[in-house]
Amino acid sequence: MDSKFSESPFFTLTELVKAWTKKEADQETLQNRRRVIRRNTIERGCPHIPLGNETIFVTTSFVQWLLENEDRTAPESE
Image 1 (cartoon, rainbow, N blue to C red):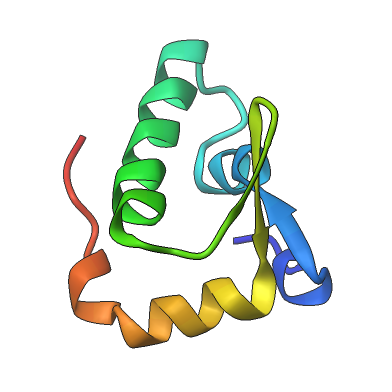
Image 2 (cartoon, rainbow, N blue to C red):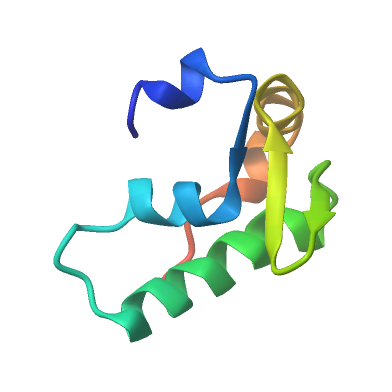
């Protein structure tokens, strides 16, 4: 993960997907990663702010949610 996530008060779902994916990834891979992240965070109650076609996460809320839900956020295969 990029260190900017610890420096910024918020980040977008798109930024999270790009940070988790190799730069040379194709559009299908990016969409699959986006679905996995949505399923493992938003659909499991992670605090977020919907903003049109984008989703905003507040860094402190996201980290707190991860800490409280560590067991449920184990990586899944795509």
